[in-house]
Length: 338
Image 1 (tube, rainbow, N blue to C red):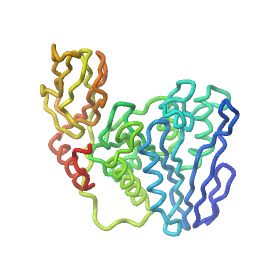
Image 2 (cartoon, helix red, strand yellow):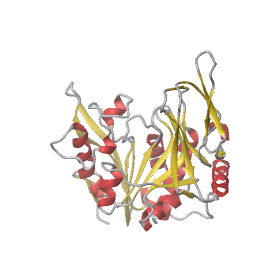
Image 3 (spheres, rainbow, N blue to C red):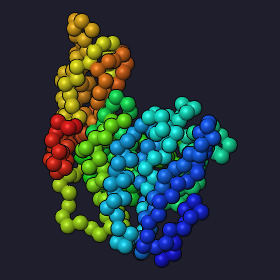
Image 4 (cartoon, helix red, strand yellow):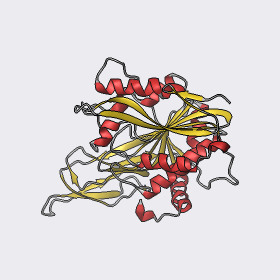
């Protein structure tokens, strides 16, 4: 098979290569590079991109990428794996979600060569890397002080995207619309199927989301025929949420949240309370609908309007609850780690 060419560099069939792609300079004029590893199989197949840290403070995906790479033998791989553990190197250096110009890189795609810093980084990533790939797994976490239950977000009207989403085998899939300026938007406009994995919290390594992410990426690679299929099937049957909703604080104060990630809650159920600093004037937070908690605020200090809980809504809520329970059980990590 022919060598795989990316960023002007060749990777022979049956080999792997680590690269540092020149991106820009810091204001000290020190060079800034994007780390990249390519594993090129001996036989033809898909070109799968797994990328993390488009938001520079989302660390779980970096560890997922590294653990996946450690498991891949190029001699047994069909196709090519392109791995970018840190896309937003500017934000990563500063432990920040954003670029130095305060832009969200995942709202800057497809970018341009002569635009803002965010636009230039997005253009570089699309031109040098995304354009060479046939499938994408984009790894994310919740924002700072928010944690997400492992979940896949994808536009499920594409059969290949749906196959990737279901084979990843998280308990919940959100059929999520595509946001303008996102990596998903520019990739899918070019006919490249993308799934987005959300799990855990920014600036943390979370054991369950990392383990689930590694397993999920390997599952997708097997589903695409890049790796040999495993014996048996995962016990987890992903449930597709028909929609989701955030529950917001109606009062300022100190949050005492009872609901936890993965909990099934019923309409009208108390999810927690908000107290004044001296403990008086407690305000109950109640669920406006029945659903599964897929996102939680981890910071106890809240202002009126702050998002507190994210609920996924289902037609078959009992099946969704069982899917979450089996998922935690299958990964053999105690529920309290969630």
